[in-house]
Length: 83
Image 1: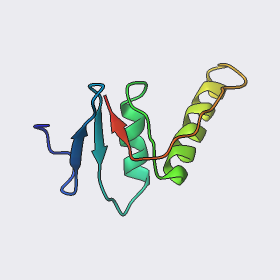
Image 2: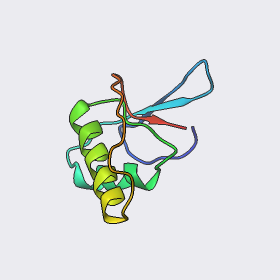
Image 3: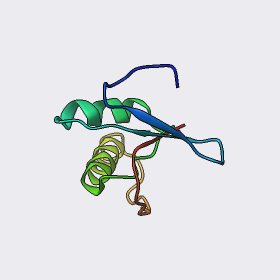
Image 4: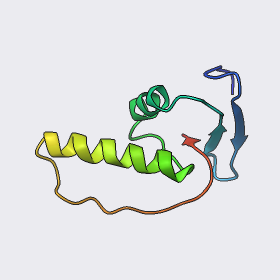
């Protein structure tokens, strides 16, 4: 990858063409906003606490817009993945 988003970032190109991005941060709020800005093109794989917070934010947004009442969830492990 050619773009720098964070000093600790590393990328792994997956066999299926997807790219996995890993990074270490100390603050969650900025990271949450950044991940949400990439929706629906990314999926947070880990840590679970970040994945849960992203899901909560997405559900809150749908509720405010009169969106769907229940969204199915799936659980994965790994790191944040970028398209």
